[in-house]
Length: 339
Ligand SMILES: NC(=O)c1ccc[n+]([C@@H]2O[C@H](COP(=O)([O-])OP(=O)(O)OC[C@H]3O[C@@H](n4cnc5c(N)ncnc54)[C@H](OP(=O)(O)O)[C@@H]3O)[C@@H](O)[C@H]2O)c1
Image (cartoon, rainbow, N blue to C red; front, side, top):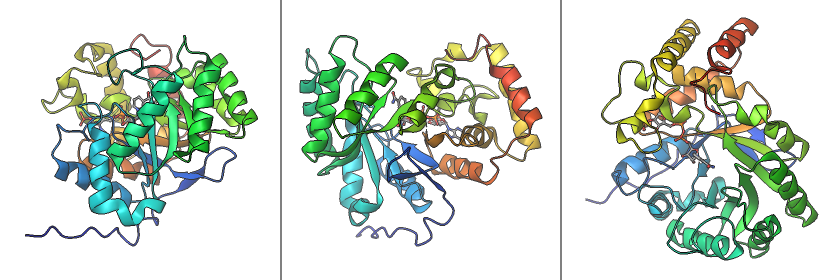
């Protein structure tokens, strides 16, 4: 039997809002979809396709990838290439697709960190896997303390000049390095489009370090990753650790992070969410999106139902002063919060 051809929902842009990315011409959806977990070779391709198409049908036109997403490494990009071939090809110009390089990808000295050699080779590999001529944004995935920052930034500039990326960004750079990166890129006529960092109710680091304000001052957007702290800021763990959850896989989210004190705070936060008529995941996303400096938040998901739940966060984005103060009391400066 021939599989039905995908046709995107005609109403896909009706319920999503878009925010301008710093001083650029680009607008991003309030929610973007990240393919770090759950989109690689260990997930049936039909599930990957259902989630990606559901997202796009609801206005999520930004897909965030990196060379090492999967698991296994590279396979999220391979699956994205299959999506491009099978469903998204007619929609290429409606999609904003990222990739990154900065973490270990292949053995030896040229498969990690921030050298020109690594970044150039990695992007070529990513483009092949994703069946793309160019990505919309390519990031230096992390600051390399050894490679001169000028070398990493010049590689980003040249990648744009070669037409392999339209824009560039940086992720998880310490503030003093981000300042140098912004200046270098600006001086070379390739202004940094986005600064990407983890930011959520449990992890206020980019706010505390001044990285969100810095992005704004530099004319870049700020995009938050792990907005649900990998699932902790959802209902997923309120009554134990489900066997199909990220925590049960014990990779990037370790079971010992879920201490009794954290669980207690999450249950109190869930009480606030219930009083607002929201799920815990919706409250956590709404909280981030109340900040106009946040251009977009990159959600992860393991099912269509989670994306559907998360999209409802867009309908209730205002908090009372009292709610915000209680949330701060629960999570600011607590041992179970992330530093
Ligand atoms: N630049 C960087 O260094 C960097 C680092 C990390 C991530 N990122 C990007 O950010 C993206 C998002 O990161 P993340 O996956 O950690 O994001 P997240 O949104 O904090 O966590 C996603 C996980 O939360 C759970 N979840 C999501 N919605 C839910 C809902 N409504 N109800 C219950 N559980 C829900 C799911 O866990 P289960 O799988 O257990 O169902 C899902 O896999 C990544 O895909 C990647 O694109 C970038």
